[in-house]
Length: 497
Image (cartoon, rainbow, N blue to C red; front, top):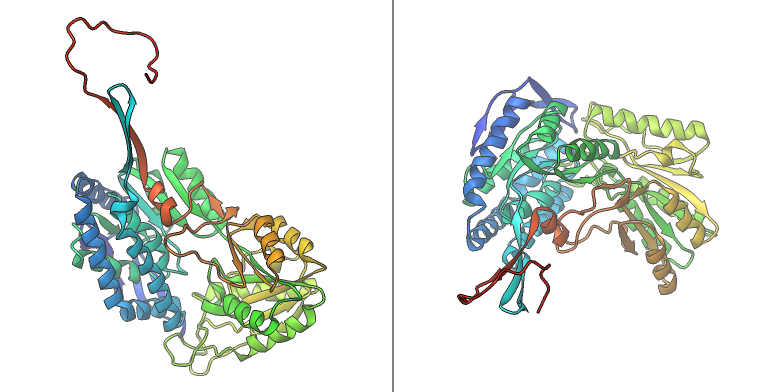
């Protein structure tokens, strides 16, 4: 069986507290073992990053940019390999995985412009003979604790910007699909990045806690569930680290009577069931505004029933399995609980079996109607192919439902009316909003992040906020006086003159 080791200081490193199984979700069979690092491996990785920072932090902007351009080309050249590696360990379709790689590459392209992004400001003659200027400086060793659902894209929200800004980086990927992180580490090496600037430590909570507590770590970026995001934020902040913690979501799509209903149903089904619903920006709740509820549910049911479920590397598959057997059991339990609570199970994919892959972690699309905000199926982040439908009498009631939810990651409105769209955009307490766009993930030059229980810390990922997170400001006030023999010291507070 293949063994997945750490990548520290430019080479593979063995060791840790043991190994965890990496499953093949489509077959339900083990395919590899990944080392579980602890404090020893974390100390080695951080030490390598500290050593590398001693020189990388002083490397010229042009050289850092050259590495980013080279990495961008290598990611494009190896796009298919990366996509298939994601599919093998995560389960999503190859085309879906390829889209993830492309969106990650866009952040590398953004980082290629780091000289422009790090430009400071200069003010001449702020006082007589005095000039002032500001600049951004790197932090040091930065950490990324990244989730299983996007093993390439989400880390690329972090490390290209951190490294381009002059920091060094340690990634702790999910132990469920760890191989892409090692693949990217080797691409960095091929791009000319010095050893120790990018490191990978695999592991579970032991490795996470060691990173959160390490005195030489300056900043931590995290993407995952809300309870863990809160834990990471509190523990790392307690030791003085800068923290960017992106948590869970319950993303709503509101459908108004003036919407193009067939188009809305197609878009929502794709957003709900793509990647088996294992996206932090998946639509998991629809709010149908009277009187379109019944018609919309009928259209959504047709879309859900037509989805082809199968292995992610099999041509024609539109939706793959969920990532683990435990994830499958959690989804099935959520559907059963909704049934017991009184929801109407319009489409039930609980008993789906894929021929030749009977042991795979497959769940078919599930559509639940007549769900209320008090039901667990609405309150919980199921993170599977389950779409729930609520009803509202008007747009204001729909907005109130969204704003009452503790999560604030993403939302969407389907309408043909500009006035309604403007009121929705202004009235929802959500970080990312789509108008006739169900998955409003911002481009790399805008920042990604939610509100409320979907974000801990005050800085979003990538874009200009990402640059701000991975740097700190410095302001210099300078004066070069002419020699004056009779000058006397002045003790008053300095003012412009």
